[in-house]
Image 1 (cartoon, helix red, strand yellow):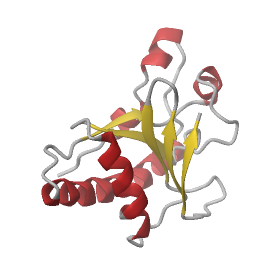
Image 2 (cartoon, one colour):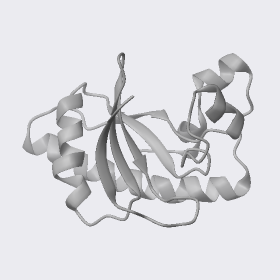
Image 3 (tube, one colour):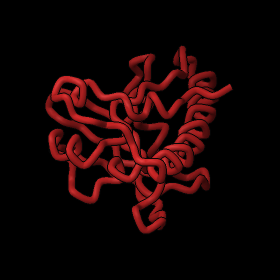
Length: 150
């Protein structure tokens, strides 16, 4: 059963509020499908982790997926963001166990051998999330994992 959809990856409250078209071109839809494959692997591994550690629901919320260039600029994203090419998603655990979610990525998922470009544990003054980049625009996957305070 699929846990993620293209519709979920392109939905944006900011785009709606600012009346920005966030409908991806067909090539980006292909990229989003590839990204969903990685997200499904993450969800399966997170479900096992949640079960082992009695953390409750393993559901994952996508807080940001695809961003049109205009939307990316509006939210302050970097120009070469993987979000613009459909190769990234920002994630939070529905169960609220953000510390455990971050630990899962850093200590387990990043070392499991899955193909990915970047896993960034991101923290701002008001929010925390995990950025998962599947590929760069050139198709490369650097397998980087780090924390970023924004």
